[in-house]
Image (cartoon, rainbow, N blue to C red; front, side, top):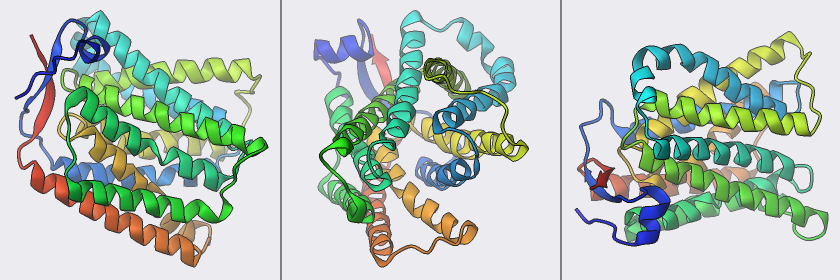
Length: 325
């Protein structure tokens, strides 16, 4: 085990304490399988978002708001003591993680007003670059050469999917910058989660994160003058579906896995989301993917296989980040 001695890293993530990698308790499920299940669940996000007849920022607010309502009762019964005893530092970082999640939704959605969906998707897909860098800088999480090749392939596949409609310059430049900021924000959300999940149970952590994100999104909607109602009955159904599938069975599974796998594993795996979404859209909306999209999707899957397999073989033991006193 190697203690992180850089004072900047200590101050950012652990106050006066350092962080070390140490063997964690054996997980109840294979964390790599859980990450893949999360990717499948997150694939429903674009489907339900497209079906909901509401402004995107409102959709994001209700998605997280309903998630908080759903997990409130189980959090109270299983995690209220933990929440009562949480340190001010962990509380602050959990809320900060929620702020980053909300900002990710906000800037990514805003980017779509200025640039193409393809451009926005490609730029947000850059987030593994920040997570891999941050994982090494803060936690000394190294990725082997095969893993880096797999991550590069998955990233290249994402670029291929959106390259036809990629825009840059002029009005699109503002949207491109917003989408790029979205990549930075979601990377911060993942990196903070990697640290806090070592000390916090899943429900208390996600309750605080989603709660903070909901508050930020509600404030943003009020600022922009968005209407919180009325909406068609089915739109409310899609709001709940967004809370259950891509959030509880998507993001929450990612957050569960962050206790046992490197932050980069979760981050790179999310590049598979467009593949699942494309397959679902084909069956639900009859949207036939283009040859370029099929090629990009195949490259993403090949890259993910290389990456996850290399990490699984490289780390047969399960490690989590713990405080070094």
